[in-house]
Amino acid sequence: MTTALSHLRYLVSDFTPVLHFYRDVLRLKLAVDVPGVYAEFETPGGRLAFYRADLMAEVIGAPVATHIGDDCVMCLRVENVDAAAARVKLAGNALLTAPHDRSEWFQRVAHLKDPAGHLVELWSPLPRPPELA
Image 1 (cartoon, rainbow, N blue to C red):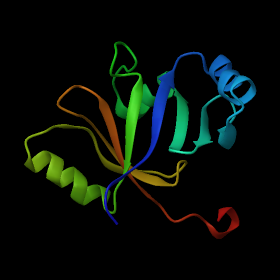
Image 2 (cartoon, one colour):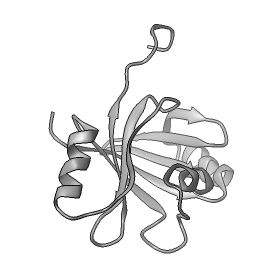
Image 3 (spheres, rainbow, N blue to C red):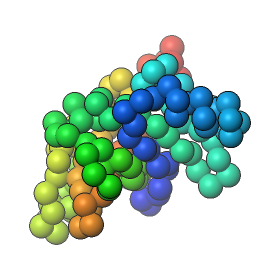
Image 4 (tube, rainbow, N blue to C red):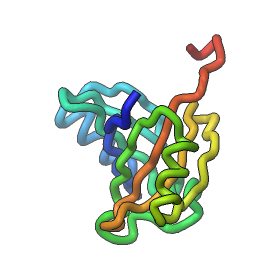
């Protein structure tokens, strides 16, 4: 599998009005709903996601959404997070988080900033327990 843009995730401080706007006003199809925390909407070009900024700050251990470029996370699905993160480091770029499992997301992830300062998440799926598959 090649690296593919899976979705754009915007970080928001006030989650409820954003959910209402995209779900009820624009009537996008809600694909994933973690009440008060995370939502993904289906669009013809891919998924549009929203996540609470305070929770993303906990994930990467640094403030986010403090200036333009921090309010959106480019999520790239990769075949192997560890290998992709190693390439990032080999090219002389720092990781914000080393590859690690986010079991509650069913994903292995690593985080970095691109040369323009945008937040990027490299991810690949983790196996789901049979009862959740």
